[in-house]
Each structure stands twice: as C-alpha cells, then as structure tokens.
Image (tube, rainbow over all chains, first blue to last red; front, side, top):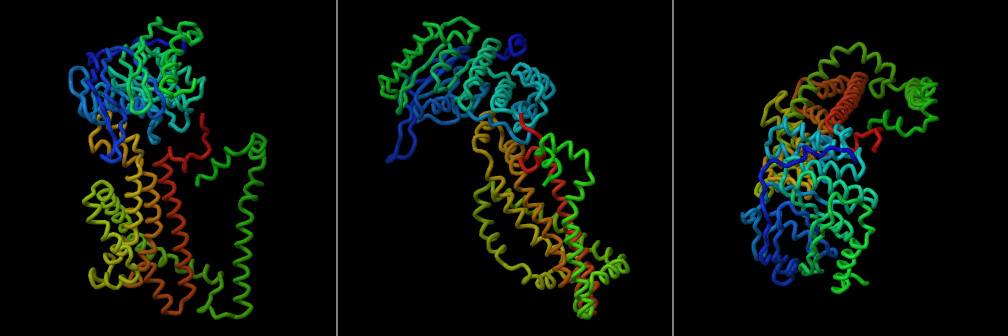
Length: 271
Length: 281
C-alpha cells in the first residue's frame, strides 16, 4: 500500500466550487407528528476541502448529507453547489454509502463500470481507468470476482473505486467504514487520505467516530442531537500525509477531547 | 442443486484423497441404495401381478410395459413430439405474456389496479373445468392445447415477475438515482437483473407445469400427443401402452427440469443457490 502510484487519480474536469447552505431546515412527517431533523444550518464548505460531520446517532447528519446531495428536499432554506441551487441529484458528485451496495450479479470490474454506463461515458476509457482504480485500491487481482467472494473491507474498496470512476469533484461518504472491523477501518482511513491527496476531491465524511473524523479531515463539524445543529466547527491542520501514529500525539488528543467535551455538554455523552 | 461441486468443497483433505482412491466405491455408495430399491419395488410388482394372475388390462407387469415401450417406440416418440411442441409453444407464450404483465403491474400503479383483480379472479377458476370451453373457442387441434398450456404457464411467471421487480434493494435504487440514472436504466441495469432469480424460479415452475397442461389439453381437444394416446390406450384396454406413455412422460418431465436447472445455473452464476463449492475470500 506504500509505494502505490496515485498520479492518474487526478481529476481533470473543472471544479464545481463551494457548497453553501443558507438557514437549511428539514422537518419530517405531518403537522401532528412532525419531527425536526435539522434546525437552521448555515454553512460554507470550500472546494477541495475534506470535511467531517460527527454527531450522536439520529442527529440528522445523514439527512444533512442527503440534502446537499439533492436526494432529499429541504423544508426551508437553500443549498447552492458551485453557484447552482440544488433541486435533484447533484452532478459531479459521488456518494459512498455505509453498505457497499455492490451489485451481486456483476463482477468487480463491471460494478466499478456502473457509473460509466449510467452516465454514458466512453466505455473503453472507463475500462482502463477502472483497472487503474482497482489497482490503487489494492483489489486489482479480484476484478473478475463476484462481490460475494470478497471480504467487507475489499467490497468497500471496490465501492470507493466505483465512486471515483466518473472523476467526481465531490465525494460524500455516509458512515462508509462503520461496518468494518477496527483494523480494516484504520487501513481504509489511510487509503481515503491517499485518495484525497491524489485527487484533491472535496470530501464530506459523515461518521460517528471522532478519531476517524479528526484523522481524515481538514475541518470537523460537530452536530448536536435532534434537532441537528452545528455546535462546533474545528479546523484540523496537521500536515499530510498523516500517519496513524498521529492519533497518539497530544495535539490530536486535544482536538478529540474538545469534540468529546461538546457531546458531554449537550448530554449526548456521559463524561 | 449443483450437488457435485458442493459436496466436493465440504470434504476435508482426508476425504478428498479417499475420493481420488476409490471412485468406484463412491459411485457404488451413491447409486446402490436407489438401484436396490428400484429392483425390489419392480420385482414385487412383477411377482405379485404374476402370482395373483392379475389381468394385464388391470395392471400390466413391468416386463410387459418394457416390451410395449420397445415395440411401440416410434409411435410413442411421435406422440411425445406433439406434446412437446404444444408445451414448448405454450411455455414461451406464457413466459412472454407473464413477464410483460408482471412488469406492467409491478411498475405502474394504474396497471396494478386495473389488472390485479382480473388476475386474481381468473387464477381462481379451476383450469381443468374450462378446458372444454377452449374446444368451443379455439376449435379442435393444437391451438386449443397451446392456449390451455398458457393458462398453466402464465400465472407462476406473473407472480414471480411482480415479486422480483418489487423486491429490489431500495438503497441500491437510491444510489443509481444519485448517479442520475434514467427510468429505463433503472429497469435494465437494476430491477430486471435483481429480479432474475425470482423470475427464473417462476419460469422453472411454469416449465414443469407446461407438459401437464398440454396432456390435459390433448385429453379434450386433440387427436395427437401423449394425452390423446393415453385416452385411446385406455379406451382400447391397452393398459400396458398407457403405462408406457406415463413412464415416457415422467422421464421427459425429469429431463425438462434438469434442463431448466442448467439454464438457471448458466444465467445466475452469482446467486447463492448456484455458488456451489467456490470459496469466499
């Protein structure tokens, strides 16, 4: 995993620019049983940034991601991506979900090619890019295997390769590693960082792991329990590439402690 | 299903070497019990019929059935051919109409509300009862038979298609939507492939029902085919010929099922039911 060349991951397409949320609110259900999932979030995410959102489960962090991705409508407020108002699936954006969602009936290579087929990209170019991506994700030798023949970590690597295939300018990840064991998760964090360095893709990572959020990101947004609000916004400027051992340094633990403190204050965590 | 590779993978290395050493012993172990049971069963039948001197028009001994089978081979095969023809055309029609109807019901609310009541009512009608009506509507001959086969083969395919198309993973659907997939792309790339195992199980069931439908059709509306042969043989008190026809029909049914399974295996190498012995990483 160390000597892997990451040059051809670089995105050549123009950037979509910043993501701007203005007083975004989301309410689920009817008048009687209405549940406020997100309460007035105003926020700007710079392009090329790696941002994590941490919060207790059910705080609306996945909802926030779905709203920005255009998979769900806001109840009030507006979201702009690259100057355009969001009202439907956002182009140039790939999403990695908690479940890898590989198609059982396609082998690994054909799974990675799915976005190319849907977006009607040049299949020949997509094939060679898919092969490169699988190599960079360390699963090249499994390209003709079916998903059921792979472990959870390998499946999620394939799923990340699939998300990178159409050369997105943004990647949103909804708790992508929470179903993996601790060691595989650490490996995936390092891999994700490699991808970020190589592509400069704007990353929004939804996670409930404070460690993961701080390790992977340039900026961590802390969300409170329902209704979801941003209660802290922390810049993380450790130089990259970061090593896993960074997590034991005092500076790192200080940030983790600060975030944990927020959850203790809101009562989401008993400290 | 796929028994050989499955049992192969479950073997420990020790058993594998045994497998290599004594293939014959293993075949004996697999085949001896059913063979023995067949010999005992047929022997008892033959013996009892001969001992009690049962007239052969009531119950012919197996040996007479075999003789009849060989002497009437050409006639039997030609009649089987007619049955296969009617069943084959009927099954193809049933699958095509079934998949189309099922897709309409699964994908359109309007079609669902308009067609489902009809399907439920028509399915509730005992099909054998309406067989004589087919004679009136479509006349005497293979066309009546084919329509009758369709009434048997259509429903399993409709039900399977509806179930299969409606059980696609909602998270996968959301994912392809986020990629910007069109409705027809969702249909061809996600809905149909993921419904394939269920649709094929419906098709398998309808393939196994098709010859039954054809034979019942031939009872009523045909002067060809195994069904007609059976009626004629019984009319002539030629019970041995009737038994020979039934035996041929059963063998054909088993072969048909095997073919259907092979096709399923080829189409669904990824499905849990077809994975056989291959190991996961």
